[in-house]
Amino acid sequence: MHQSLKIMVVGWVILSLFRPVFAGENAQNYYGMGVFAYEEGNYAEAEQFLTKAVKMDPENARAHFYLGQTYFKQKRLDLAESSLTRAFSLDPEFPGLNYCLGLLYYENMDFDKALSQFQKVAPGDDNSVLATYYSGISQYKLEEYAAAEKSLLAAAKMSPTIEANGNYYAGICNYHLDRLDTAESQFSHVAEIAEADDLRENARLWIKTIQDKRAALKPWSLYLKTAYVFDDNVVLEPAEQDIVSDEKDSALMTYLNGDWDLIRGPRLAAGVGYSHYQTWYQDLSDYDLTGSIGNFYLNYQCNESLTLGLKYLPTYYWVDSDSYLMQHQMRPSLTWAMDPGSALDASYGYYRNNYFTDDARDGHANEVSFDYSRALEKLDAYVFCGVGYEINSAAEKDEDFSELKTLAGISCDVSERTNITVYGNYFDKDYDDSDFVYGVKREDSRYSLSAAVTRNFWKEWLYAGAEYNYTKNNSNIRDFDYDRNVFRLFVSVKL
Image 1 (cartoon, rainbow, N blue to C red):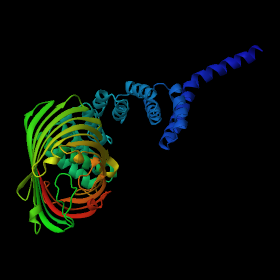
Image 2 (cartoon, rainbow, N blue to C red):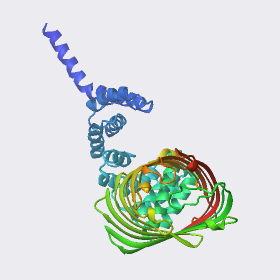
Image 3 (tube, one colour):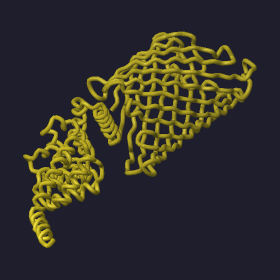
Image 4 (cartoon, helix red, strand yellow):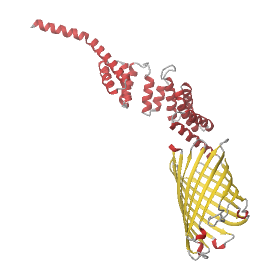
């Protein structure tokens, strides 16, 4: 019995002496199986093996590193940070550890720590290109735009697979640095080389944003349009379009609009504008129309979403060089930017009308309107709609009326330089009293459909295109029924 106990004690001592060796061999085996499972993408199994490996050999930096990577792949970021930090304390020079820690902090949106780790990756390291790229993204997130642009362009030069993304974010950095020409050039390059559809489309949206910002920064704007027009039923009334000639003709049309900001501050803008409209008919020169519209405007931005506006629009119309209508219009408005892609505009208009050829129509009108627009980024388009209601009061009761006005349409960029816009209008007009001539209360409904194709060419400010408009007016008084087709070929300049 004593001899047996002695043998057992000697055996236990021998096992104790060899236990670290056996434990080390098992830890190494678990480590190897864990790395294999990790490389195969079997993260649950890798976690089991690597957990056993670090328990058996807590000083194994490699095991802690791969366990941290396994947790990272499983989005268990707190555990990943604990394991990777432990690996760093055991072996700060472990290959790839700085890059992996950088990714971990980046995923946690701790961009200061992420940048610090990415910048420690040596230039010759396998991860140096991606580390440079993510350094730039981290600097971009920290709004260090000048430094970010340098890092992103450096990464873009190092790898064709990063070139598009690197230039894209470098373009955003230059936009924030007000280097608009450089930013536009980079976005144009991305739009040409990017393989991903969404990246190309986003680059084009940024180009449009830059162009809009340039226009907004200018204290002035100018728009000129010249068109050849064919009209198969020339309108005699420039204001209401109620009476037609039942004759067709071709005409030359010009339209000019310009605005100038006299006051421009962070929230307040005020200025003056002028619009001029002119038609010259080939045969029906008696119906040549001239319109002259002044614009005195004031805009106050209450906050990022709400803007108050006020316009005074004195308007004068001539028909065949004879005075036809003088109109004074006041229009306060409220614009609500509901989100970056949509806006709602509510306005009220008061009109004072003086008809030089028909005193019975002199009077005033009140109108309320609501207009809505929304961008469709995936389609590179926007939709718009509106509704308005006008009450007109005239000197003679048979000229009093109320009118419902509606609008709906879509504008789509079908290519980088070509736009198609389609929209429709509906008007419902009811007079308050019986017509003096016909002896009945007049009721009209008018439908209108328009389509336009516009293409930018040669210079960004030069456009050409074609328009078509169909109008049908239905009235309970037959003399006011009509159909009208108008075709236009135009060239326009927008500065």
